[in-house]
Amino acid sequence: MRKVASMSRLVEIRSYNLKPGTRAEFHRLVTERAMPLLERARMDVVAFGPSPHDDDSYYLIRAFDDLAHRDTSETAFYGGAPWLEGPRAAILALIENYAEFVIELDETVIDRLRARPPVPRGA
Image (cartoon, rainbow, N blue to C red; front, side, top):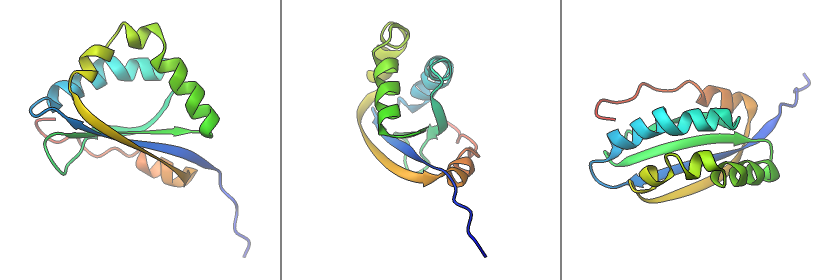
C-alpha cells in the first residue's frame, strides 16, 4: 500500500506568562482587538486561549508555509500601524515574558489542533 504524502507547514507555538491576575483582560484584548487584526492580515491562527495548567498562562498557535513566510508575515504585522497604534501597548503591558517554538507539522495535525477546547472560566 502506497502512502500518500501530505503537506507539512511550520507551526509557531507561543506560550505567554502573564502578570498575575491579568489573564481575563489579556483574553479580552486578544479576542476583541488582536484577533480581528490577525484575521485582516490573513495570519493562520490555528488556536489560542488560556492554558489550563495555571492561572497566568496563555498560548497562541499559528501556521506558516515556511520560515520566509513567517518572517515576512510577522514583520508586516508587528511593524504595521494597526498593531502599533492599536492593542500593542495594552497587550504587552500584561505579559511578563513569553517563549516561542517553531516545529514542522503535517496539515492533518494542524487541522486537528484547530478544534479549540472550551475556554475555562475566569479566562
